Length: 116
Image 1 (cartoon, rainbow, N blue to C red):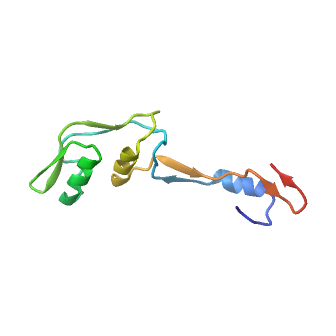
Image 2 (image 1 turned 90 degrees about the vertical axis):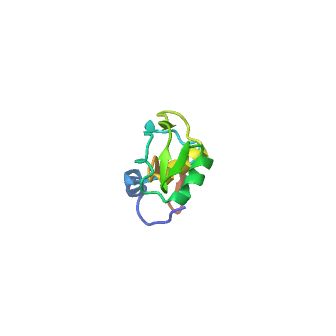
Image 3 (image 1 turned 90 degrees about the horizontal axis):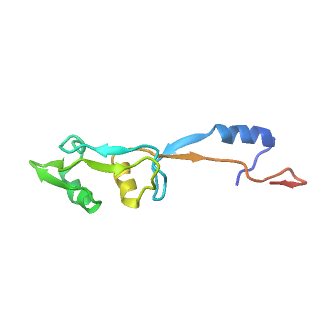
């Protein structure tokens, strides 16, 4: 709910121009295909203590000299397919935002009438 003295046209212009990237949630449609490359590079900035959590999320990982190794190339998501909760958690760990926050005017009231 948003209250203002601005006209409907001004509000629609404000909301139509607003768009913010955010982390995806389960069920969001992937807008790109992401493949994680096997080896140490994907998780080079992660603490070794994250490795069990990554395995819980479905990744094939292991620890070597306190570094996380992804043992196989892993297709994290495919463009046009819905994301699972675990995929979204991995995307968030990798700081990849794949969703957009937008607002729109659905109904307004001018003090006399309600418009939909």
